Length: 245
Image (cartoon, rainbow, N blue to C red; front, side):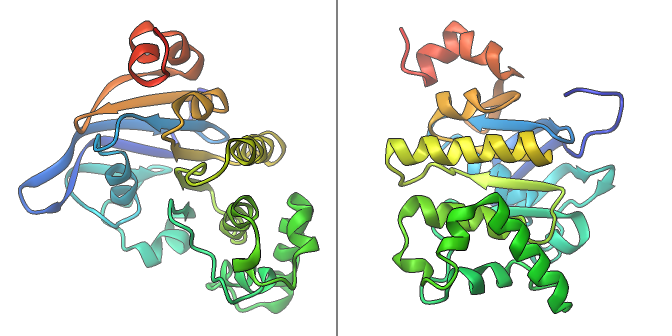
């Protein structure tokens, strides 16, 4: 996946947090190329979510830079992230509008679009990717299973044709069999449409298994990085994060 082209997303020496003078993460250097899947793992409290929030303008970058396709988007407001940078986010906590139908939830993914024909085309596109959502089109989103709701969140993130999707703990709260289905859907989207993904995943093994490269965060800093297969085989990473001895 590496090439001579500039990365789609790059963090250069990024320090970020929520209060002045109290950074949670320090000197983070990270790259994601087009068409790549990259996974960030680490223990609870390592700063993984802060990295994502800093990218998306939800935490304050105190120093360093966030670049998207070479454009400096450091501290860009979250409401401008999709329109300006083409970055969408699937949050960890459930974000479907429970009383609204699947169709209406997908419509909200095109909140920056006014062309009704275009909106319908994008909904049909998502339905082709996730036929289960088409079957549930008129169903209230809150009545679907956790796995189906996660599929809806991913589908909604694709409505505006993002260049990059940030996925915060896509397996959170899901049963193991459903987790496998969600990861397979993400892998399929990467393989079939070239979706570029940066994910945080507490399930380190499965996250790395579907990714091309990975980063390990500990105490707000990067401790390991490299091809996902190398991290999966690394004895220190295996003992600390993969449950191996």
